[in-house]
Amino acid sequence: MSKYDVTVIGSGPGGYVAAIRCAQLGLKTAIIEKYNTLGGTCLNVGCIPSKALLDSSHHYHDAVNHFEKHGIKTGKLSVDFKQMISRKDEVVSQTCEGINFLMAKNKIDVFTGVGSFKDATHINIAKADGNTETIESKNTIIATGSKPATLPFIKLDKKRVITSTEALSLKEIPKHLIVIGGGVIGLELGSVYKRLGSEVSVIEYMPTIVPTMDKMLSKELQKSLKKQKVKFYTSHKVSSVTGNAKEVVITAENKKGETVEFKGDYCLVSVGRRPFTNGLGLENAGVKLTERGQIETNAHLQTNIKNIYAIGDVVKGAMLAHKASEEGEFVAETIAGQKPHMDYNLIPGVVYTWPEVAAVGKTEQELKDAGVAIKVGSFPMRALGRARASMDLEGQVKVIADAKTDEILGVHMIGARAADMIAAAVVAMEFRASSEDIARTSHAHPTFTEAIKEACMAVENRAIHS
Ligand code: FAD
Ligand code: NAD
Image (cartoon, rainbow, N blue to C red):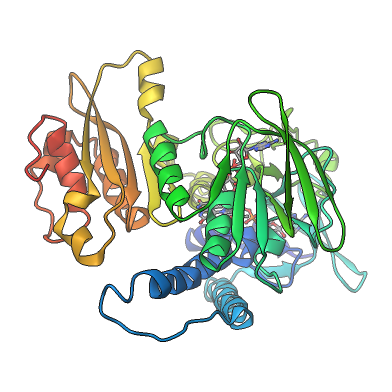
């Protein structure tokens, strides 16, 4: 029987990163993945394919709507959707292949099959050919991720009533895509199809879209997407979803209690994701779950069984790839006897719509609710030379600082390239920068990052360009 210092179950951005860090620290490491490709949700049916389609559809949208103004004549444009999907598939397979390379480079043994606990130190691997292999492991890291959640009355037929997984591999561009849930998936994939010509209607239960983000971001994003002709139905409670081979019919109750009917050809259900632990045999090792079905962990991401850890979407916290990866490194270092640290407040959140939305730290509302005295500086993208040059005038950067100490407590931005710019705010906050620190830092001109400096200057009412 093969013996390991650490076995990782699940090869998403939590699992494969944990495995690499364990191997780097000299631990004999195995990873078990039930699918034939490594990379988990993120690489196969999440971050990477969605960004590939967002990038392709963004090019098309730009070509149709903005090229002429730039003085570029293109003639009649059309979408080869089959090619778009097949380029996305290529991006996915190349990225997943990269993980095979990293496993081999780090001498990590890869097992393909469903991993389940026989007991706290033995794991069975059920293979596709019907055979089962058992390995022994001093420590195990559970990184089994999540699956799409749904509503109790919805039957996901995966043809017309679909999740993000199917939405990433459709055979045709929907005529009318009805999105249930105005969160990250709904808005990103809704944007893809809106740009490609679908009518898109978003039904959201809460009064605002992306309801957990700063209210400024929800408002500005909804305004921008409305301009792109996405239709929004906030404060609507979906009550039924029915469909046949050609059509879906959705009913929802609006704020006034009236029933509203929506008819479309596809319905994307994007109301969140749930932790996935099916088939893991947790009971054989005695690992406890929380009431919400997450694996219960302490501050060291250790379960109630000392040598078993859990990370990523299957534990509490934001369901984000980079959060899962940070936790993977954290646990690997903990097992190796180090004392790592993670600051969950500094995990950035990004929505890859256009304009992009990105945030780190606390929202204005959270700070007000906590009774923290704050000062706020905002700067509009439209006042930037670079934004005018590229015709990306929408959005703003908002910096929230502590009223007494001036420490930056939150940065919320919407605009071109916000997804990349948020890193500057994360670094600043990691080093506990004050807004004045950033205001006094040189930012290259002309760039979108100047909006961060100007927003920091605006905290003391001394922005130069607005
Ligand atoms: P996962 O990536 O879900 O991986 C878990 C793996 O475990 C899977 O491969 C699964 O097959 C395997 N597994 C499960 N049970 C077993 C078992 N018993 N034996 C063997 N293997 C098993 N996050 C971002 O940060 N940025 C984004 O842009 C982004 N975009 C997204 C877009 C979409 C459409 C979706 C759905 C998600 C997106 N996410 C994004 C979220 C991100 O994908 C997840 O947060 C991330 O994948 C979680 O990583 P993980 O390692 O915890 O689990
Ligand atoms: P989400 O939590 O972002 O959004 C779900 C939305 O559905 C919320 O706005 C919620 O209020 C709404 N909702 C819930 N029940 C509803 C109902 N009955 N009727 C109408 N609306 C309802 O979840 P998601 O968009 O499904 O994404 C799942 C996870 O994947 C998220 O945790 C997200 O972090 C992650 N993800 C991240 C990215 C990214 O980082 N760019 C992209 C895609 C997915």
